[in-house]
Length: 330
Figure (tube, rainbow, N blue to C red):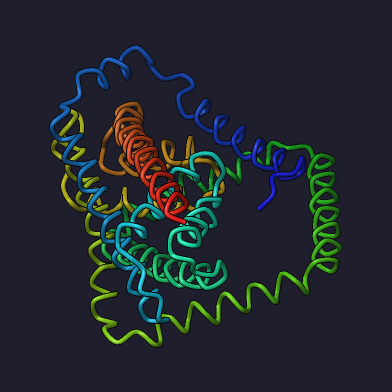
């Protein structure tokens, strides 16, 4: 992946959007009081929360290793683990770039072809999307009243009121802009669609093949369940770090997990801004003030970013050391 000017501008815009959402989320809030809550947070529960996330990373590495083994690449666990962690580190810089980076790590350490790795990554992501869909469905079924109120009063009505206040000329201009962008998108797709479709087809075929050829599919599904369970446990334990959220139960953690899953799917570096707003809004459903929700979101997001920075730098160092030792032997 080459970072040309167009790509750099695109990611810069995404970062600015994330920062803008972060600014809007904290606008009008008592920042001093939020900072005081963060400073007085119980670090024991924050550490337990971070440990749960790390265990999810370990399970993710074990799950990814299973996909490699199914297509006859006997990759070592630690190389797969370092690839996962370095990928998360890369995502803090460029969204979705980590998927390519972790495949590159396995290419350098285990000589696995990039497209074979991309196929396994696509398989992983498909299962994660499936889990997010199922958890969202469960949230809608078992907490319908809470979620409906949020979607109707906080999303639908706000958007409707905003559109009503707009001048029709601006609406027409916005429609023309959307149509123009669609035209440009169609043109770009027509120019590049053949190569892109070929690459996607190859990756998908390899990805689906890796799961289909797997002998112990139940272990793969168990790892997937474990990954999301540890994310849920992380959300739950972090509640106890603040007095304002310490009385929340697993149902609130479950809702926060679903909201955070959609937030992290946004093409913004590390989910900055979107994560804070979404998680804070999820806790408002349980009578937690938006201010306290922002304090909680800031703590859990910052602890996870710090964890990735520490583990990512360590994994990069160990990977480079291993590469240097191999080259010195040659």
